[in-house]
Length: 136
Image (cartoon, rainbow, N blue to C red; front, side):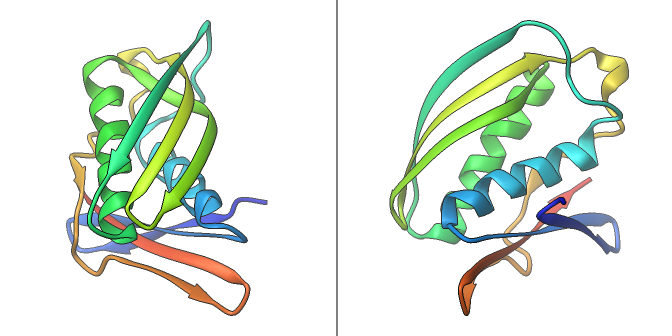
């Protein structure tokens, strides 16, 4: 079962992602991004990259993480397929991400960037929830 859903918005699209941990929400938001941007799952040889993200809070950290995924998708034709994420605090994320190459025809359309419009990342009972919108 997917732990994200696509949110419609005028001229934009959003992703609502949830999980038992904050790291799960980051991963599920990434899957939502790829659901918006790709026609099919990437195939081929995998390449693993390591990242260290910093921001002033968890909402900004989520935007920074998704910005990097959008950048790699459209500049290097790489889509994440496995995520090893460790949130050290609400402002620091370490990520080991396995990527696979996509072909230009695999893109469903252009997702330009995540925005701060209606951005949220909060805990509701025992579940973490985030909503983020993307410029299209």
